[in-house]
Length: 141
Picture 1 (cartoon, helix red, strand yellow):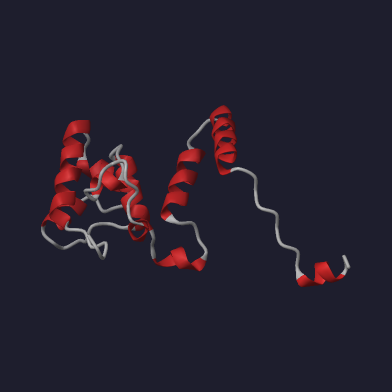
Picture 2 (tube, rainbow, N blue to C red):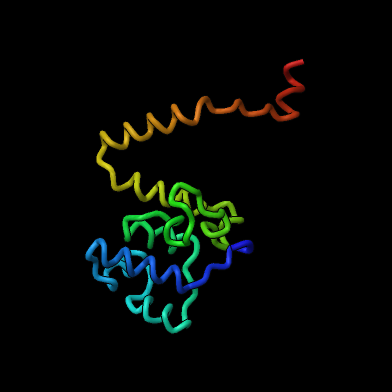
């Protein structure tokens, strides 16, 4: 997986195993992930690539698992960043993991949102001080 190309066969096996284990209807899961209802058939036939970016993240969420598991990595290992990024990632929009966090946050009730925000802020530590612009520094001499 050096160039983050993923073989469809093993991913398909893990998706199908997860569907069986969770007793989920494939069409519903695919729609929830933003994929066509016939996605698994297309993947099987080699007519669709393994999803990347948000679709991969949403597929993992819909299956109640991690992106790492789906792509065949140790579930405790973070997936390669390239798998979570889409073309627009370089345009300053949210990365795949950021959007997944935001979607999960939006599903929480008010008290849970407050608790999650508190934990994240504690984990992140203090925000760095913004650097003063050259114009602002001139006035402080």
